[in-house]
Length: 153
Image 1 (cartoon, rainbow, N blue to C red):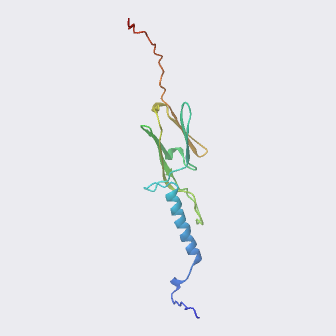
Image 2: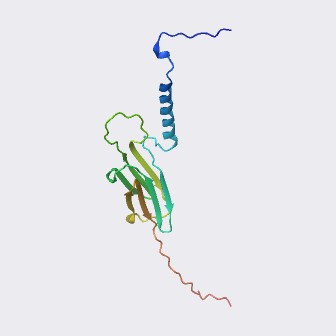
Image 3: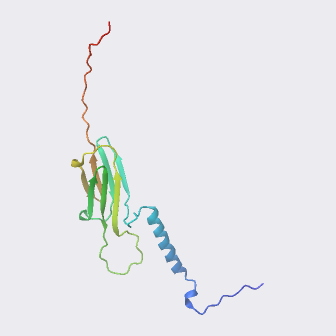
């Protein structure tokens, strides 16, 4: 049995493995972005940890290479919103591979319970933004129980 032979005079019909690998890489990157934190508007959601202590909440957000001026921290009710931009550095030469993110980021978390928004602090060190949100202190009041004097005879 003879197999059919496919002949083409066009160079565009040739199999190009490296082009197909580039296409596969692009598709996998798109899939990872959608599965691991890209928001609908294209902003990236950075990795973060939220820890509750007895006094408040500590939110640590990974923002490598981001300068303090490029970060906005806002507290709206109980929602903490951190937005900003991963900016591109000026470079010379031709990119052969790029895995760093460039563009806007948006991280939001709703904190449970009452918080003191007037004492929130934020600091940036070694590529990690740390936001401390203290809990509102409810002062306890001791209530004395009295005898109502209503005795039945």
